[in-house]
Length: 313
Image (tube, rainbow, N blue to C red; front, side):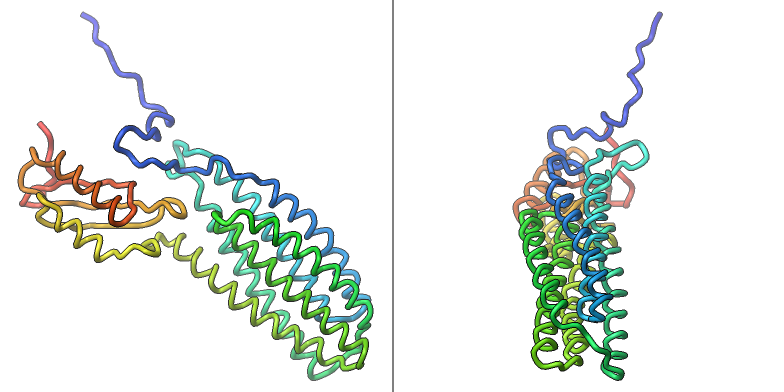
C-alpha cells in the first residue's frame, strides 16, 4: 500500500498571496532607477568642480555647498542602492522582503546631513571671528552654475514622490539649492562690496534651513524602522472598533505597523465565544478594518473565553 506525501513548501509558495490575503507584495516591482542614476552622475561631477573652485576662491559658502553636493551624491547613491535592494522579492531568510532598505538609507542620509551641518556651523563661527579673503567673482559664477544643476536634479527627483528614500534625497538637493543661492548672494556681496563676513553668515543661515528639513525625514524614517503605528491610523480607535464587531468579546496583543510605506498591517488576538462563528466574525473584522482604517494585511488568532487558542476539529 503506497502513501502520497505533499511536496515540501518552497519560498515562492510560502510567500504567495491567496484569495482573502493582503493584496500588496513585500517588494517594489516597477520603480525606475534612471532618474536617480542621472541625478547621481550630475551631482557628483559638479561636486568635484565646486570642491576645486571652493578651495581656490577660499569661500566657506562654496566649500559648504560643495560638501553638501558630495553628501547629496552619497544620498543619491544610497537611494539607488536601496531601491535596487527593495525590488528583491522575499526569500527563505528574509520573509518580509527588503522594502525597509529605503527607510534605512534615508535614516543614514539624515545622520550624515546632521554631521555636515555641524561642520559648516563650526567653520562659519571660526570665519566670523577671523575673516579670510574670498574671491567673490569665482564664487558667484560657480554658485550660479550649481544652482542650475540643483534645479535640474530636483525636477528629476520630484517625479518620484512615493519613495521615502527618494524624498530624503530630494530634501538634500533642495537644501543644496538653498546653499547655492546663499553662495550666489555671498559671491555678489563680496565682489561688489568686499564684505567677507557675509560668507559665513549665509552658511549658518542655510545650515539651519537644512536642519529643519533633515529632522523631518529623520523622524519619519525612524518611525518606520521602529515599526511605529502608521500616521493617520488611531491605534486606540482600531482596538475599540475591533471590540465592537459582532461576535468579538475582547481584543488583546494588538499590533499595527507599516509593512512598507503606505501598506499598514495588523496582528492580534480576538476572544470569541464559539468557534463556529469565527469565519463570519473574521469576514466582518476584515471588512471593517479595510473600510474604516485602510488596513488589508490582517493576521488574527481567535481565542476561547479561557484565553486558550481555538482549534478547528
